[in-house]
Amino acid sequence: MTEDEESADGLRTLTRDLVSIPSHEDPTAAGDAIESWLRAETDGTVERDDHGNVFARKGSGPTLALVGHHDVVPPGEPQVTVDDDGDESYVLDEHDGRLYGRGSADMKGAVAAAMCAFRDADPDGVELCFASFVGEELGGIGARGAIDDGFAPEFAVVGEGSTNYSGPGVTDVVVAHKGRRASALVARGESTHASIPEEGVNAVYRACDAVDVVREMAFPETTVLGESLRGSVAVTEIDGGTAWNVVPDRCEVTIDERTVPGERAPLEQAASIEGVEWTVEQDLPPMACSDDDFADAVLAAAQDVQTGTPEHVVKPHATDAGWLADAGTACVICGAAESGEAHTDTESVSYEVLDRCYRIYHAVAEDASAFA
Figure (cartoon, rainbow, N blue to C red):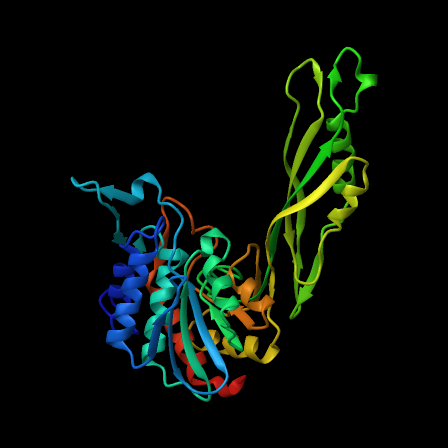
């Protein structure tokens, strides 16, 4: 395949157009471009919800959704330019078969591949839905809003990164990923002058006792479709005290827990220490594919379009697939982004792998009888 050839008409041009649109502060313009393209280029029913999510649908039967997001994290200094009027635009570069720019890997490239697959597919026995959410980088705001409004596909292929997991150059199928629970332990005591510590209650000591409880906890573990997934628990911050000569009456400990489907570390046990309270500040759910036939069908599609041998794999971090799976959707993840590529100042995506993802999405939509 030459640099100018594409497996989907206009895929590379569409990718470049989407990546060029700033969407780290406000994803509206990127959503406008996606909506406009879908209305002009497809025969689907297109809508934009109150959250800013964009949907397109066609066909009938159980719903298979091709899912992405069009918000991005803030660009690094090399990835943005400002014109004389103060307007920002993203810097694009192309060489060695790759497109460089903020959002190319995470995940406007996969969004473009899903848009083209939606356009070209004649869905077999399913309602084919394209969905691009806002606010994924902010904890799944768009996905949660859509789910609250009734978005409930039976199946979803989420286009987050799954390339180079089992081996170089291979696009795999993720059947599970970790979630993230951020929580805090707040220890309270009674302050006094440090020269008479026995007349107070040291909140730092209480916090340290609670940290010892956390330190001894086993990491949560599970198995999904034969793949092992191991979470983690780590104390990442501690803050207490006001002066060198005052016994502190408050100390706060931050805990980062990477959760796995069906298992959580018993962090509430740390609150058994007198004067210690445990609160959860963020809980991004893990994902486990709930339908073996669906996971196998997507893997078969991935095997058919590449020379490498893809596998069912697991992913270390949370995505919108967690919210969908938590709501009852059978999810897998399959996308062009490579491990370690997203959120970097040199973020890029392979055009060859984008073509591959298009073919995977197209094949899954057209052979839904394998799972639906």
